[in-house]
Length: 258
Image 1: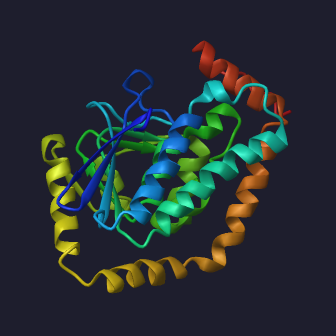
Image 2: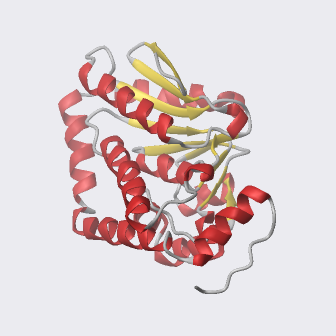
């Protein structure tokens, strides 16, 4: 049914697995198309009462965006690319049904942003989180500058955004980025167990809890627009072209500040 996602509906919980293991489950246009279709299904199918998003294989949840799709884009095209991602992630965040990330490995760049768009996150012990876009002469464009700051605070967020460093699952738990850390073989069991508890509660009340909690950050929505503009502007820089080329060529980038 989907090209890049496998899905399983058991006991009213839909488990979605991003399935591009050869690309570390990187987000490309087709993944976004499939996510959009899955969200339509979640919203319209009364049999689905909650969802889990995870990645295929033992290494990666989603290791980032597919950088090969960034080549040759100008500022406006870059902004449009980010807007597509933001719009889909808003649909996850604002979904009236609980959507939880089961982070089974690397959650970097767009993968970290996808996990943060979910209502909360459970991580396996080998999970790693980061926003390494600065290494490409870029910034996060799918909401990462906003949600990371909301979830772990400005100081910690800026350190991760500005260094591009990764943190492990234990640090992510300490920071409040994830709710629980479990051995990988227990990840889906733990996540499912929490959702099964939620599904015993009143569905309208659950939906209103999600809506009310999201409203706490409503004044920050202008930050997403600022992120879009800044992300698009990055595509007009020589540093972005150098950073993405270096990534694809597997060499160290040489930035000039232009």
